[in-house]
Each structure stands twice: as structure tokens, then as C-alpha cells.
Image 1 (spheres, rainbow, N blue to C red):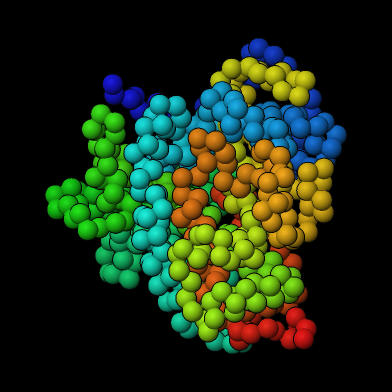
Image 2 (cartoon, rainbow, N blue to C red; image 1 turned 60 degrees about the horizontal axis):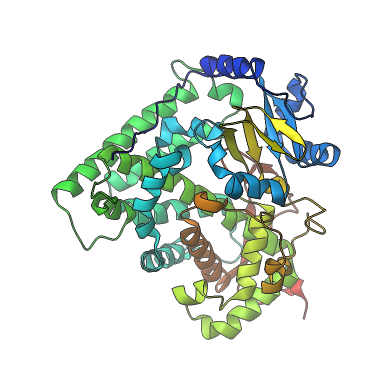
Length: 480
């Protein structure tokens, strides 16, 4: 039986606001307690830095509370039990498409991030083979080649904007591994990379600018970039349909050949939406995690020393790591440092949903159709779950420490049936980049600058993250 595609969402912000206000007015139950008065200052503070709003609300109201942001009420659920409730035990009662992830539809279309139910299950089932271990291992060579290329012109003393550097690198890996396009070629590869970045810039704009429509607005610029990008992507899909190459292992080629349980292929439109979604989720989250990990290692010389000692022991003489070594726990210090980075800076920092039916949690009822968000970023910093939550302590993630964690305590990649499909791909890419970099250089923070974080569309440094390149070896700052 054919699975129906999701209904098209309106991109008219005024229509959405009116619909939200009407749902709130006709709600079949009261919202949980919380700061529900109309407050522009709270809204702007939340957009700028949500943690100082969410964490005090958790202390005052507990694991579930509501808060008026922009025009309407949003229910937040924080902590291990809440995370498990939304992502695993009652996941079917929460839709992604009707939450804030619907804002991504104009660019990404109906990809895994913006679909629900049977349509999502069918798409995920078709896509899973493209992310089997052997497929990810095949992409490992591309990751290593691109990382080494990106390090070629580094010299001791050079000042590097680490976020910008990692973003260019991750986009090149994604273009090759996902689209099978060469970003160095004059033509589809380079143009697709440029237009994707142009389109994605829309989601980094202030909310007030993103709701404006008309000529020369960010919305119009994003849609123009999407149209140009679609021309490239659909032309490539058509070319590969006409001339299939069984030797190609990029994700687009694999999806063009994939079949569902009834033997049906994905349509051109479906392939386009899924690859675009993977490109967004893959390169944006990898960029952020690499940047934050290098920042924390520069701030914590004892942790960096342990990583360097581990490299010298497991990869003597600067030997390149194998995919197996990066995936099987051969580098536990690296694994723990990555896990702790993802605890402090989960790229997908919030999980916006809309509940289908009313439900009870924590002694409160939530009406049907409410916006319900969990936040890994806030949950990962709760002091009653994580001792010294602001500290960078990779030792939390020893095998014994991970085994003792409550269900739902650590969710940087979501949970349940909607755990990020590209999780292993992303982790391998991050570990490859960081390992190859640390075998050659170490990075020093520039000018004592402090890090500030922005939230849209994923966690990333708000200002340039400039660091000084130093020679590989145990830096003097680490002591003898």
C-alpha cells in the first residue's frame, strides 16, 4: 500500500500565528505553570541565550513548565525522564513536522527531520542501508583525504578561525560523500556548495527578519538559492537515472537504487529532500562539534595531554588511524572527550514537537496540539543529574560512568526510532578530523577571548573562533 506524503505546510507566518493563538484559545486543558505572561524581553533573551531562562525555570517549576515565547505558549520538558518520555516511551504522540522543525521545510523539503508516522518509517527503512558500517567505513577515506588537504597550508603561528575552517571542510566531505560531487570542479559541485551556504544563511538571521516577505528579504534570497540548488540537484538525479553506475558509493547514488518493502523506488523529489536534509544535518553539526571540541581541548591542557599520549601509544610515529581504530574504542580518551563535548554543546540543542493528544506528565496535563520541546542542551547541564555541569570532565564517560547514567540523561543525537541516522557517520568524521589535526598541530586560544554561543539553526560560536596554530608536541603550557 502506498504511503501518503505529508500535507504541504503554509509558509505564511501570519497564518501560523493566528492558528497558534486559536489553538491556545480552544485548548482542552490548562497549560502547565510557568512564566506565561506576554514578555518581549523574555523572548529576545531566550533567542539570544536560552539557558539562563530554562535552567531557573526548571529549578522553580520542575521538569515540566510552560513559557510564552513570541506570540504563544511553549511547554518545556527537561531531565532524563522527560527526554525518555518524548523520544522513546511516548514518541508516537509527538510530531516533528508541526513543531519548529517545520520551519526547515521551505529549504529541506520532506526529509527525515520534517516528516512523521508511516512516511518517516518508510523513508528511514530505505535509507538505513546507506549508513551501514561498511558504507560509513568507505566514506572514511574521503574524510581523511579532505582533512589532510585542509591542513596542508597550516603553519605554526598562523591565526585560524576554527569554525570557518571546519565548516568548509565538513561541507566538502558532505558534497563528496552525500552528493558524489567534487567541490573543486567548475560546475555542479562548486555551485551546489555555494548555493547551499547561501540558502542556509537564512536560518542564522534574527527571527524578526525571517518572518518578513517581499523583494530583497532574507526569505526571497533563501528561496532563490533553493531554486538554483534544485536545478543542480535534479539535473544530477536525472543524469544518474539515465546512466546508473553501480560503482558509485555516495548516498545519492545509493538512494536512487534503493527500494522499499514493496519494491518501489524513492521519487526524484524524495531523493532530493532526503539528501538535502542529510547535507544540512551532517555538515552543520560536524562543524560545530569539531569547533567546540578544539576549543575545550585548548582550555584543558591535562585532557589534551592524555589525548596526545594516547596517540603516541596507539598511533606511534604519527601513523594514520584506521576506521576500525576510530570506531572500536581503541582511542578511549578521544571517545570520552567527544562525548563530553557533545554533552556541553549538543548541536541539535532543542527537540521541538507538537503533541497529538493531551497527556499527563509530572502531575500536569498538557493540552492536545501544544508545542512541546525537550532540550538536550539544558538537560545536559542540570546539576541534579550532572555534578559540576559546566565543567569539561571527559571522565564522566568511562564505560562504568555511561552504564550508570539514567535513561534519557544523555541525548545529543535524540533517542528511540528517531535517533540521528547519520550519528556514526558524524562521529567518525569528527574523530578523523581531530585526530589528524592533533597529530600535526595543537591550537592555542587567541587573546583570551571567551566563547559565546548562538542557537540557530544549530549550536555554533557566535563570533569567530580564532586560534593560533602551534607545532605538534606537548606545549609548554602543559608543563613538564
